[in-house]
Image (cartoon, rainbow, N blue to C red):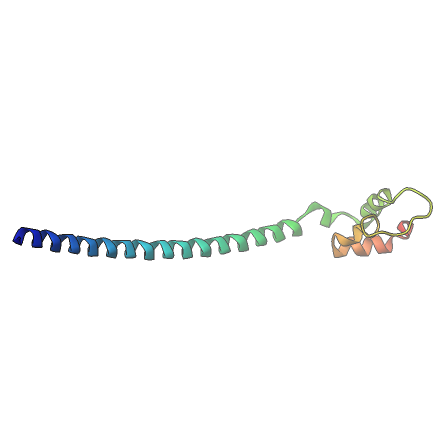
Length: 111
């Protein structure tokens, strides 16, 4: 009977250690998830900065106004009398960026 009692005490002790190990692993998993979330947020912020930098050095931003105007003229809808529509040039061109909007509005041949 003494051996059975010792075996039972050992089993209870082992179960307690295993429960503590599970709790420890659970806490580590939560820390890892928090770290992953933090890293994903940092990555997202960096990707946004990269996109902004790429946009700022885009070749189109350095095109001369005259060249943009010529390109815009070729984007006009065919037909003699066309009503402006947001999904067509020149209104569509003005939605790209502020510079394109200014150039499109200043190009009388588009209107």
